[in-house]
Length: 246
Length: 355
Ligand SMILES: Nc1ncnc2c1ncn2[C@@H]1O[C@H](COP(=O)(O)OP(=O)(O)OP(=O)(O)O)[C@@H](O)[C@H]1O
Ligand SMILES: [Mg+2]
Image 1: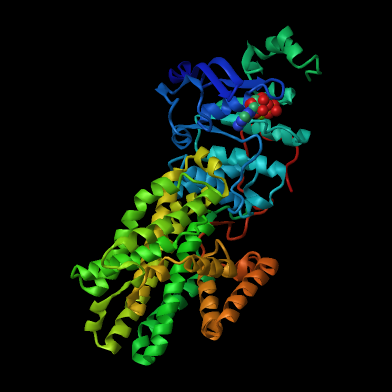
Image 2 (image 1 turned 180 degrees about the vertical axis):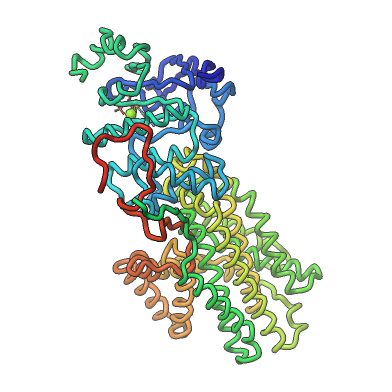
């Protein structure tokens, strides 16, 4: 691994997010390197999605700072963060329904990716191919089913040429074959040097990728480290209410 | 597998090339209008050009930008007012029409700073308030004399035939320019960005679209178009009464044209303007029945052709005469499972391949 990957790509300190009286993120400290793939687990309502929303700038934090690639991005608008390489997929897909699948990804490449037209074409085609969606390129996004909408979330995120890719439950509802395909795709992205944060309830998929696991509960990070160890931590087992941790 | 793997992004089709050519020919023929037609016919066509401008600009705003404004008469009225003022200040009349529109576009910039923060219905109502305010402010001008109004007297300097012809040519030129600029704008990256904003603003921002500046481009363009239309209307009507120009009926016409023609389709807005023009020509004189007819037409379309006439044709026959989008082909064919670029991820999927 090169020099750059030893530097943290993202560092979060003292991050807090409240919705009125509700504390959703409670003093989060977190840091990761560009060569890491971090899995996030935690019960419903733990604040996982909100954490990503604050990282990409969809929500402003109540307090705390976010540093990305050495730059303080805490007050940077979402569009500028994505142009710097932070991107997420939405847990509930948000396609541009009136546009084709290709156009969805092209917009991401031409804006977030800062690519000129021809490069953006190539970038979009290649992102679609990676996500197994090329054959749907000319389909209007609003006609897609849920699984393809999720694939489109990933393809669109890749269109922006990210450095840090934040995935929010893209593995749900897949067959074994599809899940394997997804894992293959994410591995390929790691090879290309993209840092990955992946929220997933389907832990066995996550563990094929993550070399570090975080468990969130009630807005806090209650465990962080090697996946095997984290999954065995009593607090984690309890947070899942003794539920089967596959 | 020795399939042709060349990926192409097509933005023109043979049909659309032909359509552009025919459109250009029609415009050239129209340019000869004053040599061929009576003054009455010339005036009618001038009206049609103004309707086309109003329709395509409102469509750009609402159909592509998702910014539904019921206050575009603000810019229509300001355009006419600015033209009166500039002519009064001694500027030559026809240049004054265009400069008036440019001035209104500049004025629309600070307005956009406030209005574009509003969403959905708030934006619509907000624009209506802006129109009412503009109307009030213009009434305060002593030149306008309240609702009594004033006229573009400088036009009287022209002999009647010349005046009709000049107004016609300026209107034709303005419409052509508006159509050409808008077509280029919507085909540029601004076009895809604004549609992304329309479909999901937060997602658009999340993939790097600069939401405010993109919306502002469309907003200012639509203001410019409406102002130019208003200034041209003044050149045909000569009298300027604030009530007529700042009336909400202008926006009602825009909405009618765009909904009937097809919201969010470039061709549809033009078609809608033509339909509105024809309905008005036939029934315009029949007073209340005209309004009933307009309402009934709008209702029939809302119920049976919610995408408008062009929206329906476009989907039914996969038509695109003036295409704004991007079509992907591989080896000259539409992509399919069999026709997909080779070379998968580094770690190939063990299952689920091959269609
Ligand atoms: N915009 C909002 N306004 C108010 N409360 C919110 C908002 N977004 C999230 N919340 C609340 O914050 C808490 C955390 O939500 P979040 O979506 O981050 O959880 P999560 O860990 O992603 O859960 P899940 O596993 O169900 O996706 C929840 O109680 C939720 O109701
Ligand atoms: Mg969530």
